[in-house]
Image (cartoon, rainbow over the protein chains, first blue to last red):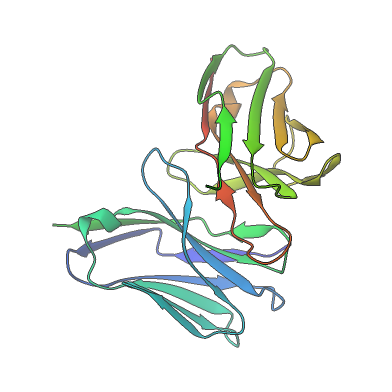
Length: 111
Length: 113
């Protein structure tokens, strides 16, 4: 099946700066790339997703970039706030098949 | 309001006991999942169900079995629980068309002593 690699595993940034999380995938047929945020003790929640017919998507301070040729996608959080501190998971999926998750990035935003 | 429920939320069992974790969704989603998540780690897929009585193994099915007799319910069963099955278990569901967003339940924290 698909393999999704996610880096870094831990990311510490200063409040107000940007944070970037990078993921790569192997299956060129993957066409759906969601990002989930999981706060301590909570369940993962979808925060943004991108499909293979797009290269960039932005929702407020969240930007997702997709490079299909390189099979890489990334999440960028601009102007980070303490409330952005959480575990973030990238994932890749082919149509309605299972979603393959990365191992997660622990984001710590320091005040 | 789309919702996935899990019962119980917390469970303590002794090694060798049977465990039943229940999941429900009110969205008529065809596909449902069981994951486990160990502290600080990612989500490991245990089983997928594509509809009633249509279940497939995920990446770590050993020691687990599932049952789906109604579309809205998906159960995870541990026959003779082991201490290394102590974990947080998440159920999730999604449609097979349109949006592929997975909706996660609140999780069940299982401790096997």
